[in-house]
Length: 166
Image 1 (cartoon, helix red, strand yellow):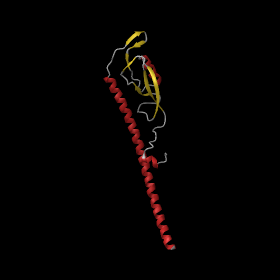
Image 2: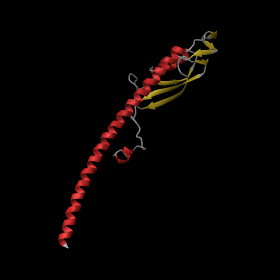
Image 3: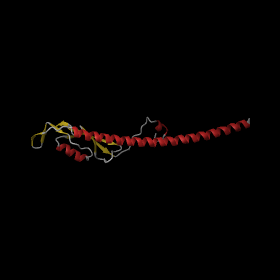
Image 4: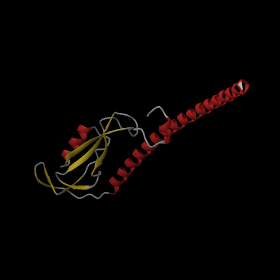
């Protein structure tokens, strides 16, 4: 009986070591997949930023100009064209909007990976979009880039279930 127990113990140790090697291999592959996932997310975020920027540039070119009317010195009435304040510092963007007869409305801070050429404190997006017509005195929502975590963790990811991030 002792011989059989010794033999079974040897088999179990070999199986345990084999399982440890497989587990280590899986962990390495998961870490590699997690790196690839992070790189892909960063690339997609940059591409998304580039798409947004190009769409805004194209919309600027397609917009039609409607002349503004001035009722008195410094007073703008009717519709005015929304100026492009994207990639401008917040303070300058507010001044440009005021000069155009508009006001800065809601100011939202966005943390994340910034598109190439955009620094913290600059405008990422605006609503209404540049080149569109808005009633004089109306507000423009501004999204400002701020420093923060690069990417939120995607808790639905299978890789996250096995990573040390949880």
